[in-house]
Image (tube, rainbow, N blue to C red; front, side, top):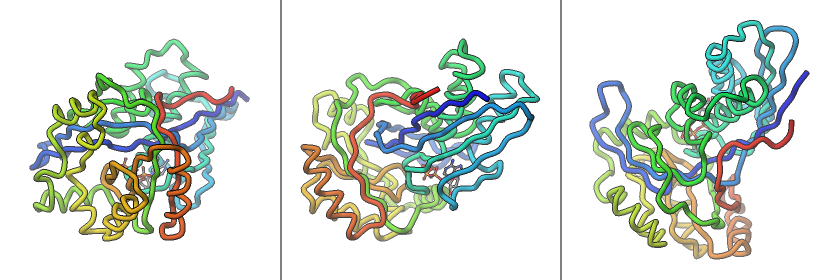
Length: 295
Ligand code: ATP
């Protein structure tokens, strides 16, 4: 039985501009800057002799049936490489909070693809792995690349940022309420937010290149998310009160992030925020994507 463990990092959207109305295919056109962070799940993939697919997870709230994106990733991979009678076991050690806009499910899917490629098809290029991933979710290709990427289309057409963000300490806070991505976009479509909440992508990229992170950060979906989970506004205010800057919501929420000037400041802020919020963690930004931990 061959086994592999993959680190599946979370992401934050430094910048997210969303165009309405949604496209005829039901997706919204977005302009985004995605940043990987060291907060992560660990996905263990084991090959078994008997055919079949099974998944276990340390978090009982995560579905273990074929709605789990890691299972769907394994099915797609096996179809792409043509190993119909293989046995695959997946175990997810969950570190990324769910329904947070941190892309946890997509990260697990990407980690599963990276693990299966290492075990079964090491010659497969990143491009092919990314196209298998794109069918599973808009963020999956990002987690194969990681670092700092610009996302166009529905967020899956990637290009590396001209100037990746240098390693920075960041604090992630998630309020008790989670945000359903579908519900946030639906409120947004009904006209909540989106004016100047995020700058134009070109301005954001120029600011990022010049090291003015505060002028790059913004999220059009924040007002719609706050209309659903009011504590998102509290989380943003609390991160600011800790002296963190810039501060913003990630993706469709409800997690928010704030940048610190030092690891000490990040750790102290996370400790203070954990008294008010169920999840508050200090971590560093992460310069790559899913990574093999051990074979
Ligand atoms: P996104 O920002 O990509 O829309 P998210 O980060 O807000 O997603 P996830 O943690 O990916 O949220 O979970 C969203 C839903 O996906 C969950 O409610 C869960 O039912 C489902 N899901 C499927 N696979 C997974 C997985 N491996 N881990 C967590 N949730 C998963």
